[in-house]
Each structure stands twice: as structure tokens, then as C-alpha cells.
Image 1 (cartoon, chains in turn cyan, red):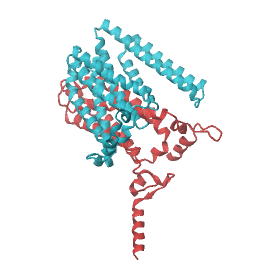
Image 2 (image 1 turned 90 degrees about the vertical axis):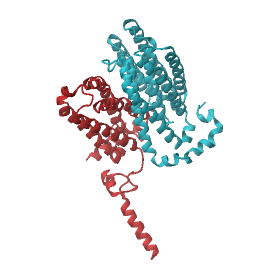
Image 3 (image 1 turned 120 degrees about the horizontal axis):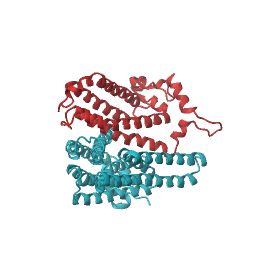
Image 4 (image 1 turned 180 degrees about the vertical axis):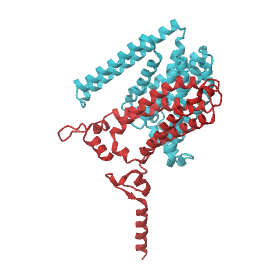
Length: 276
Length: 215
């Protein structure tokens, strides 16, 4: 089944169809491309600050300053990014409402937006402000935000035509683990990852022909699982190692990873609306 | 000369024999998912690249991390920026390879390259001139004017690179459509398959036609 807002709220179609005629959508429509640029700029501001703040929670980045200092310096810029994506998103969304109403990728994007706001403001920022101390409420917000984000990932993984977009999230996760892992773990992880890519390419380009979808599809799905297991596995090994050696809590690391990847999921889903 | 090379790149390079044979460029463009993944990666990597370079520029403008030395901010953040830039260039080259002629005759793409060169030039000037006496102002909350100007130029040029990039897929100025003469010249429409149609000529024709009808 194709999960869209049309399926969830079928009675809304006349209202959605009319949104383009409502102020300010009819003004935005001819200037659509300019507002898209604003949407992208806001996303870079939000994403860049999320990356820096959450990497600091993983002891990477500006380690000369405590996480609370990173938070203090970046929070207003991050607020600007969040307000920017929401305002520009509502405007371009109104001008393009019916397409979004019929889009599964848009459902994923909204899950990522809601999950991202909860994870960022409920968990990631309070933990950074407290220099890594995780309060009870931060844990609760993390669990709620991660659940909504996970729901979005599942919808994306099961959506025909958009599930390929999940490779953006997998790639980002692979890079975050590579940046955060250290010493021998980093090398073992990297060699394993390169080996997986080489074997997948060998099978999909050497064993089967490019148009043999019947065989290629299951092979690619198996490898997607293998990538996910390898990356998450390496992340968990890092988590166990640092928890013992540096007393860096498991919750802090999970919050930091999800605080970055949730926004990448939103961006990937947003781009995939066009390819759906 | 450049165009001939791009025609070869798009239509001949890697082409096998047989009626359905495709060049590598055509195969990439026609791929089921790969082109989309490249394009998506290009866009999402902007978050890593632009998102981090903006923070360094804001530090140079004295708008964030005022108590942290500039060298600490740039040394710790710029490796991430460079990683993003490498991915952007790799995916950008691959995307260009899939449609070289479309981009060659696209004014937004040409403008993007110009602003990209200006942004790179700004980086070179910053490293060779502005950074010479960085030790003297490294810990200042508000860096000197030269550094602030470089940061403003950096923000502005990357903003324009992003905007020009987003405008590329829009067909406002496609060759073959009646568009201003200057745009036809700037994107070399005369040599394109669609040719060059000057809006000014069409307007004159329209006036002549109307005049004719009136007479």
C-alpha cells in the first residue's frame, strides 16, 4: 500500500487542492525557485549546526570547548535554520500541495521533521547544554523522537520507488561512524565496508547483467541489510568501548547519532519527492 | 572545440556496437536509480559543506564562537568542510558527465562555475594575504576588517553558487526558446541543437506582423 496523506486524511482533498489559490501561495508559485533556495539554505544552517553539536557529543570536532559552549554558540543559528525550513517549507508546500498530498516521501519527511524537532530540542540540545549529563526527560524525548524517526525510516524502506533514498541515510551513518570510530576499530570497519561494496559491485556487474532486475533486486536488498548491520554494529562496538574507557554514556551517543541522521532522513525524503 | 569534446563525451565515449548500444553518459542518465542517488547525494552533502563553512565564516565575522580562537574553529571544522567538498566535486562531475551538453548551454550552470571560481579565489586570497598575520588577531572576538570582508565574500559567493545550482533545472532560458539576445550569446545557443531565437527579433517580427495586419 502506498502510504500518503491522501490515505490518512482522504476528506481533505478539496481543501488541499485549493491551497494553491490561497494567500500567499499564489504569490509564491511564480517565485517558487527562489523559495526553494531559501529552503536549502535553511537546511544547510540547521544541518551544519546539528552535525557540529552532535559530533561534539561524540567527542569529535571542537573538543577544546565543552559541549555546553558549542550549544551556546550555535543554538540561535540552529533556531534560525529550523524556523527557515518550516516557513519556506509551508510556503513552497502550499504552492505544490496536491503533489505532496499524494507523496509517500512527504509522509517520511514530516516524520523526520517532527522526530528531528523532538530529538534536537528535547534530547540533543539539553544534553549538550548539561555537558553530556542525560536527564530523565531527555531520555523520554529521545525515545519518543527516535520512535517517530524510526517510523519514517520504515515507511521509506517499504515505499516502492523511494526506498532507494534510504541509501543517503546509510551513507551518512557510515560517514558518522567513520568519523567517530578510532584506532583499530576505524580500520577494521573501513576495510569491511570497502569489501562489502566490492563484493556487491562484483555480483551486480560481473555475475548478473544490468537489466536482470529479478536477480539484482534481491541481491541489492540483501546488501542493504548487510551495510546496515555492519554500520550499526561498528557503532555499537564503539559505544561499548567508549562507555568503558571514557565513561561516555550510551544514551549520549545514541542521541548524538540520531540527532544528525534524523535531519539527513528528512533531506533525503525531501529530495525523493521529486523522483517518486 | 569544447562543444565537440562534450558531444563526443555524451554520445560516443564507451559506446559499444549494435542498435541499442549506449554511451557511458547515456547509460548513466538512463539508469534506474543511480542518477537520482548522485543528485540527492550532491544536494545532501551541501549540508556538510555549506553548513560547516558558514559557521567558520560566522566566526570570522565575530557572530559566533567569539571566545574560541579562530584557528581552533577552522582547524576542527574545515576537515569536515573539505570532506564535503570532495564528495560535492565527485558527484558534481558525475552529474555533468550524464548531461554535458545540457549544462554547457545552461546560463545558470555557467554562472555557477563563475561564482565557484570566485569563491575559490577568495579562499586563495584569504590563505595567502589575510591569514599572514593571523597570530595577531587569532583570539580577537571581532577579527580585523580584511578577515571580515573575506568571510562576507565567502558567504555571498557560496550562497550564489547554491542559488545558481538550484536554478539549473528550470527551463526559463532554454536554447530554442525566444530569450534575450545576450542570454543566447552567454550560453552559446547558436551552436546548440535547438539553435538561438532572439526575443528582440521575435518582438520586431510581431510588431511588423501587427503593422501589416493594420495596413
